Length: 369
Image (cartoon, rainbow, N blue to C red):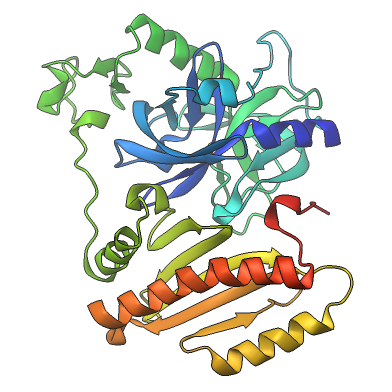
């Protein structure tokens, strides 16, 4: 299974919106990216990130809320940079006890894979059949593929039972094949599937009225969705991100969560409304295996001199992190601009110092253990 897991590192993509994070995978023949509808809900455009390409935006082409499916645009050279995924042949049956692997980006972190077995090949919810298995699924796995031992996709990961001890459910690929067939018959136009009558409604004059022309039910097409506009502290944080020369749309990674790259450092920004705190963590390089003491000495010395920032190494981690903490009540245009600029500037500076002078390991050289 290790070969299967390694292969899909370059197949799955991470999807980010102002409201959610999830996973998707690329189908070369159709030249689209597959994910869950709930991952892209209320967005006409999302952010894509992966190992083989630069972070970019992508239009939502098709949504089917009933089956929790969505198709995303694969534009430009993205298709040539992504490895294709293979769907399991329709005539190959699944059995209880078959080994499966769920891959994705749980909690917005980087690629992970969990193994399990199929416990029920046909669990029915609301007249839809699901594959029930015990491969661990977490928020962020949604929309990622469920694989068999051959590395073929047998399902799309959908949901878990809360406190259900790894009871997960995936939509079988047969539903995906049918959705692709219907979408092609419609001419690949931007469209939505009516939840009530299951007809596809495309972006024509009828669909734009907001009602299904077949049954009259309310329907929201991707093109009808208004562009996200942040408010409050989120708006302030995004103004700083923009001021520092970064694309705000590409930085959004879920509710009150942003991620940007400054030089060689990855910076994660998080606003906790409950705590009234803004956290900024710049993930730099990693500790080397030898000569670690000088790095700790340098970090302690710098922490005495730094204002509003601190260097640390989280418990059970090798990561060197530069952190910023601000109470939202103290955040204003002047203090925020100064603190954010300092974090971004120092992150790239310290990353270079630790690597060039102390032999720390650059992120590009990290090896999964």
